[in-house]
Structures are given as C-alpha cells and as structure tokens.
Amino acid sequence: EVQRAAVLRDVLIARLRQGNPGYDIAFPTDYAVNIIIRDELAGEIDLANIPNIANIDERYLDPYFDPDNGHSVPYVWGTTGIAYDLDATGEDITTWEQVFEYEGRVAWLDSPRAMFGAALTVLGLDPNTTDVDEIDQAKNYLIEHAGNVVAIASDDGDTLLAQGEVDIAVEYGGDVFQQIAECECDNLKYAVPEKGGILDLTSVLLLGDGPNPELAQVFMDYLLDPDVHAAIVNTIYYPSPNRVAIEEGLIDPAFLENPAGNPPAEVLAEMFYILAVDDAAEQAYNDAWDEVKIFAGS
Image (cartoon, rainbow, N blue to C red; front, side):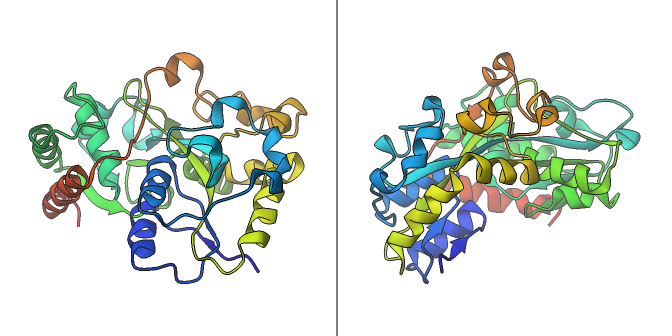
C-alpha cells in the first residue's frame, strides 16, 4: 500500500531530515520540493513509468525546483490569499494592506514565508529576499500590525472564518472554496490580493528510502489520469495543470471561470512563487517568525 504524507511544508521537511519514517510519496509545494531534493531526501522516478504525464500542460513541466521532473510530477496549483466574511467586513478585502490595517478579528497563516512575503510586498521589497536587514524590516512591520490577530492558524483559518471566530483569514484558496461549498455560505469570499498574491505548484514527490517506489510511481501515474484528476479537482477546488482534463470538459466550468479560483493572466503577473533560500536566510525567516508569534495571536 502506498503511504502518503500530507502535512504542512515545514513539518514535512523537518520530519524527512530526521529520516523517512516509511512514506513513499508526499505532496509538497515548489520550494519545499527544492529543499527536499537539495537535501538528497527525494527518490528518482522513471518517467517511462508515468505515461500520463503527457496530459500535463507544458508550462508546469520541467520546473525550476525539479528540472526534467526527475523526482516529482505536477499535481495541482494554487494560491494563498485572503478569505473574508463580507457581512463582517462590510467591504471587499482585496489587498494585504487591508488585512494588516483591519479593525476586527484576523487569522494569519502559520507559514513564515507566506506572511513575510506579504509584508515584504507591502514594503516594496523582494518577497523572496535573503537580506537579513529586509527580513528584519518585515518582522517589525508584522509586529506593528499584529494587534488585530486573534489566531495564527495551522491551515484551518477557513474553519475559523466559517465558525464566525474571525472576519478575515490568510488562507489557501482551495481550502476556502471547499469551505464555501460545504457550508453554502454566500457571505464567505476569497480574493487573490491585487499585488503580492502567492502562487504555488503542488507536486507528487517520490521520497527516498520509501518501501514501495515502483508502486508509488504507478499511483503517481493514476493521479494524472484525466478522469481521476478531474474528480480530485472537482472535490478540492484547486486549479489544475492537467491540460487534457480541462480540454475534455471534465472539470467544473463554474470553477474554471471563477477569477478568484483561477486567476486571469493579468492577476498572475502580479503574483509570486515562494522560492527556496539558503540555510542562513531560512533560519533568519524562522527566527524572525518566532519573534513575530510572541506578539501575534499565539
């Protein structure tokens, strides 16, 4: 049986650095894939075992974090943005500045790179900076704007929003759309920020030292079958890199046409990917985030 690790990126990386406890594949996003490969914790795949990779749009192949897809294949892509209760906010929330300056209850995402990326964007700096002084500026900005934070959510900000515990949550778009579909809440909205929204590409990554690498690759191929993939996307509401599934009309057209769920080209142009940084910068982000959390909602 193929075992799957579906945990947050930073937790996944930390766990694998201690040794693979028996997982075959994981579903990390771009920069985490880069780190796992760099740390020699990934297995090598044979694309001859994954013929359904031909269904993937070329723009999602040969990514910077895994050239030639030697260790991973695309799964879904997504955005990190702003979920909000329109009844509570009284207006659409479409910028990071509105989130940081909101006079109400806000949940931040427990992701240092996402939150620092947002703050760095507001400050007009590179959201992937490795400059310690710029990271410090972003830390101070977050601390200064932490007064409205009532929770730092471990990927459950959408639930806090649906339960009425917060008015705004920094969250993953797909999770928010799942929540909206489940509760049928017309008041819950999701927006990609006008500038500085975060893009990610989730991959199916073969892990090193897994017990079933051959079976894992069979499962990876299965996930890229158009019908299987469409059934997944129509359930989890994350945008699809599967060209054939889209062209054959297998994915819900209402979701494909939703600009918040599938941002148009002009919005994508203002978004950024979180990139892997060197160990020193990674530690600087983590240390700064620990300081921020002392002052914000935790």
